[in-house]
Length: 303
Image (cartoon, rainbow, N blue to C red; front, side, top):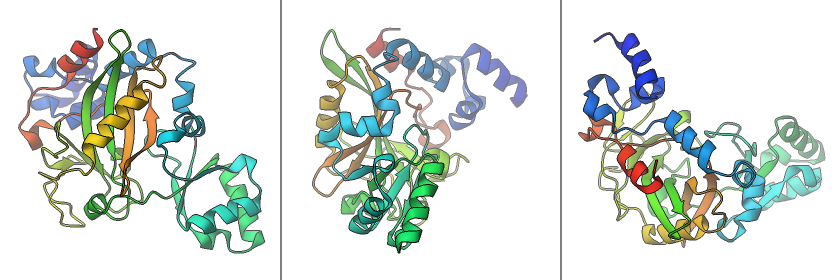
């Protein structure tokens, strides 16, 4: 098979982005298998056509999201634009480790980790605040303390879940389209596009397959911690699904959301809600599964 022509054909015939083609081993799939795969362009169509463009602003802006979903945030945060250098420094010192974020960034871009050394003294505090504002890192959040079991996977990052949902307003029912465990690999964040890896999770919260990263490398055990990924049982998973269901009902005008959830020592907390969620599916060469999630999406959403 000529890969480049097939990639171009797949982009037209199946709406497959080039990264999708690589992630889900499209070169190895039959036509009957290919038509079962959800893709990023298809997900974008759903987001653009089904999520209200005004209501989705509360999801696209992380500060507005924190305000709207305050009940489930579970951590302190600060809007740098509304705080003085002294207040910024006090926040950093109080929480020791903080994450600075660009409120409208995607895929983990514009997120950096900071500590008391960054605000040691009035001049450094002022310079730190200025750097944040110039970089549009308007949001400061206290670093999440995760459940000890989650920290065992990779202690340098908060290892989170992506729960993709569709909320059926007519039936007042939440459909879970995908359950994903995202794991860091030495960096402060676990995002797939920033060196992290992911695997799919079953209905009970158990990791089903080895995780894989953007290079296609698979990990049955974590390369840094040595913890087994296959069979890893997520703590507080039932509580996580209950929280996600409750959040789906806050803004039914945005029915399609990818929720990023961290597991704190005593409860799940939400990191953010993505109204244009990326797509996560099992990788055939890693999992042995050669069918995608498009039929499930169609059944729930009705397209």
